[in-house]
Image (cartoon, rainbow, N blue to C red):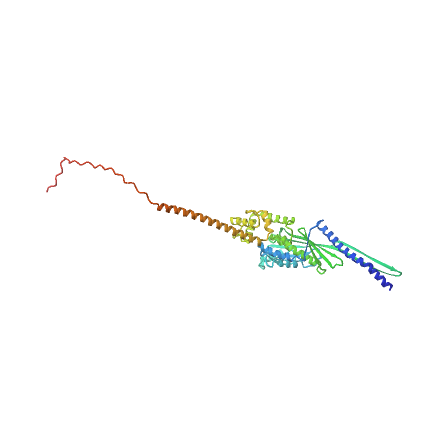
Length: 432
C-alpha cells in the first residue's frame, strides 16, 4: 500500500512536468529548425509556404510549356548517384516519374533513360551512329548526384526527472525531448550532347533540411527557393525518401524551365519582385539578345503561337513581325510601338497568354473595324466628288446656247479685168 502511494505521488508530480516537456519539445523544435536554417542561409526571415509535394507545380509546368510551344525536346538522363552513400533511393527513377508527370499534355520532353554510368552518353551516341540502333537523337543530357547529406547538423536534447528512495528501495521517473536536423543536397546540370559541354545557367542545386523531433515520429522538411521556404510535414515512413523526391521534382521544374526559357517561377508561386526572378529574366534576355538571329526567331515563333505571325521563324525581321509585336505590346498594356526591349520580355514571361491573346484579337478586330470605317468614309468622299463633277458636266451640257449675231456683209470680191482681144494673128486652121 505504501509503495502504491509512492507511485501515485510520483505520477502527480510528473503530470505538470509532462505538460512542460511538451511545450519544451515545441520550443526546441522551433529553435533547432531556426538554427539549421541560419546555418544554411544566414539570419533572414523568408516567406513560408506549406506544401505536400510539387505535383501541382509539375502540372503547371506542363501547361506552361504547351503555352510557350515547347514540344518533342529529346533529352537523355544518366544515373543520379548517391555520392554520400547514405541515401538509398532510386533517384533516377524519381526523375523519370517527375518528367513524365510534367509532360502529359504538352509532350514537351522525350526523355531517354539509358545506362548506369557517366560513359553511357558517349556509348549511346557511338552505337546510334554505327548501328543505327536508335531513332531519337538526344540534344541534351542530364547529369548530377545527391551531393550532400549532413546528419545531425544541429541537435538539442532536454530532459528531467524525479527519484525517491526509502530504505533499501526507491522509485523514479523522467522524460526527455530531442530534436535534430539533417541537410540533403542535390546537384543536377544540363549538357549538350554534341560536344559534352555544360549549358550555361541550366543547373539546379538545392538543399532540404529534414527535422526530426520528439520520439522521431514527427518529421518535417524545408526547401528554400526564391527567398521562400517550402515546408512539408512527413510521416516517419516517408522521411528522407520523400524529401529527396520533392527535391528532385523541384530540380526537374527548374532545369527544364531554364533550358526552354519557360517561366517556371510562376508555377512555384515565387514573388515576381524577387531578385532571383529578376536576375533570371535578365540572364535570359541578354543571352538571347547576344544572337540577333536567334533573338528575332524567338519572337517570330512566339508571335506565331499567338496567331499574329504567319511566316517562318527565319530570324529576319519584317513588317508583319513589327505589326504583331505592336499589337501584342498594346494587349500587354505597354507603349504602342514595336520595341522588343527587356521590359517587353519581362512582362511577356509573367503573363497569362490565353487571356492576353483574347485582348490581342479584340485589338485586331478594333483596328479592322477602324480601317473599314475609314475606307467607307473615304469611299463616300470620293463618291461625293464624282457626283459633284458629274453634276457640273450635266449642267454644262444642258445649258441653253445664246443666239448668234447676224452675219456681217462680206466685201464684194473684185472681178478680174476683161481680157482684151489680141491683135496678133491667129494660127490658121489645118487645111486638107
